[in-house]
Amino acid sequence: MSVPRVEVTPAAEALLHKMQGLHGPLLFHQSGGCCDGSAPMCFPRGDFRVGQEDVYLGDIVRTPFYMSGPQFELWRHTHLTVDVVPGRGSGFSVEAPEGVRFLIRSRLFTDAEYRALEQEGPPLKGPQH
Image (cartoon, rainbow, N blue to C red; front, side):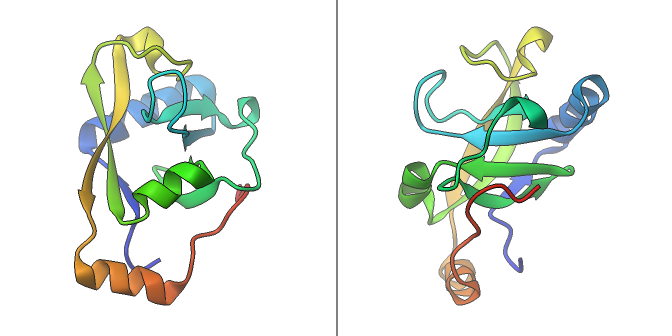
């Protein structure tokens, strides 16, 4: 992928390494539904079933990031950066016991980035790992 759809801050990368040490391989899913709204949830890979309509946005720190299809339709023009902040979310994400939570920082793709993504075609759907 020439233009990444999702990236990670150094703080979130360090936390992901720690969570991988505790839980093994992980995945992110952002649903736009309940449990913290559109906050990214991080799960052990075997604990969350990726649906056929979930959109694969790429990997960060060897961790696939998926977004629900309806949520992606609203966010398709948006570059995502996974970050971490103090506080506990209301979901079931693996970082909750650490007293921190993952969150998304976003910006619109530039015109050039969006054209490049459009030329690549739509992102993949369904489980990729």
